[in-house]
Image 1: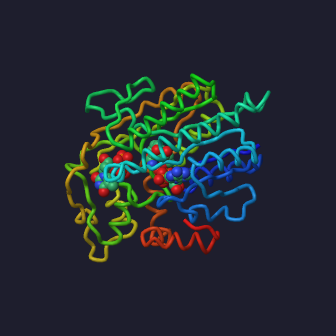
Image 2: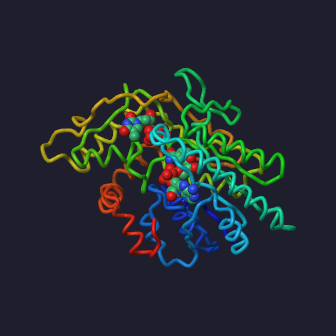
Image 3: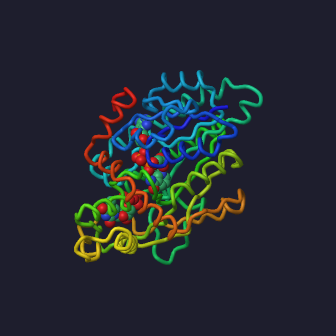
Length: 358
Ligand code: NAD
Ligand code: TYD
């Protein structure tokens, strides 16, 4: 048995592959990891499994149907877990095209390759096959303060080019189930945080800027709300959905942790004040700067994850307090990873370590 992971050198996919190989020790189920190594893909994240024969890394594009079909034929995976995407809202505002290319056209190409492969499977292998599409709560749009959290039945109302491209990919995945019977599972997760997070997103950016003495740029009034989940809880939820989810079903994944951005930034400053005080004894809060708001900024996301708990018995292991402390600790303990990501040196590192060019 093998699984094919796309985007497994990114933040969530990387954590997923590391956790999968750590937890599946007994079964030793291998992972084929297909990743284009875009700017957010980083093989240094996978350093701990370098040389592990159960990890087969392939640099390539999900839209490359010939490559994907060949990998499927060669490795005969029992499941595809699809993380690969352009994932940053601000980048989608500045340059939406890459989002359409990877998230929509790329997912379409991947679905076509998988449809061909699955169509040729017979008996138990065909029955057991799953395509798990990793999506986001952002496809549901923005909530007013008093509205109840997104359920799986919430209407789609994506507001950014990123969320629109993810919504388009969700619709394609759903249609492949409805039309061709492809056994798909779709998940919508809230904002993730944790180790190996590229420092362009709120939490890692604030930690690394704080430590570098740089401003902490809070968009607008900072009262926008996100629902935060520790990345390893997202990975455990995906494993549970893969194991026991019903094909064609949609599952929301969340941590019941709604927080305003400014409160997150205050929490990070306070933790850093304890764990790595500034040389001058002042609080990191001094570095907070309010900057212009993001265009079309969604005000609030909140996930109702009761279905996943009720049907599949999943619950997050971390509280926000435990997860955020672990995250700050991780960034304090991994200055080299951060430095190489920020300087771009991780790309040369990939070349020298793996002999592939990013
Ligand atoms: P990321 O940007 O850290 O990683 C994306 C990975 O995909 C990178 O390794 C990149 O090299 C790879 N990739 C990009 N284009 C590719 C292509 N055409 N072919 C093959 N590989 C390609 O993103 P992430 O935060 O790890 O997000 C992973 C998935 O989870 C995405 O689908 C995202 O929409 C979803 N998601 C993310 C969050 C979050 O908070 N980060 C929350 C919910 C859902
Ligand atoms: P982000 O991490 O980009 O995730 P998303 O936009 O997918 O939710 O941003 C999280 C929130 O933090 C969002 O409301 C935008 C805000 N934000 C800032 O205030 N300053 C920043 O520098 C960044 C990157 C984000």
